Image (tube, rainbow, N blue to C red):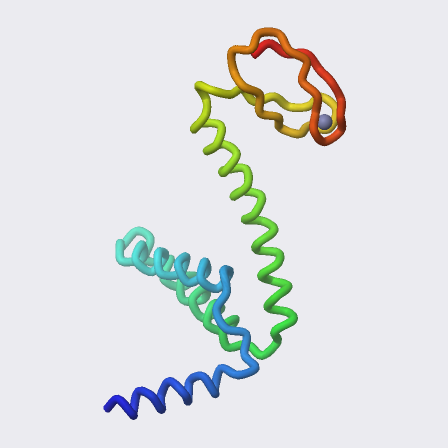
Length: 138
Ligand SMILES: [Zn+2]
């Protein structure tokens, strides 16, 4: 039995040679498909099963695809889109975490967000990126 599963694993590995495999986009698509399939249990939105299967099949197609260049480009687009949201969200999280100790300002020159300690009164802030100085009350 153990040998059978060992052979199965080796066979699967051999079969996956030259294929793209799973990445962040196919994992995301798989979860979307699963969530849509679960939602499709309910009668009023039962039609969701069709796009759910299309999304799931596409995510499997991406995993087993041999066109690695094209799949990597799709992944790059996906990461670029989600990266913006992730970085925006992490900035919001950080702001919320130290809302009592720091103040955040935008540089009027380059729009960079600058973190300044709270309660220092009226201070001149110099942007670390473009070196522009501006005066704010913290
Ligand atoms: Zn600046």
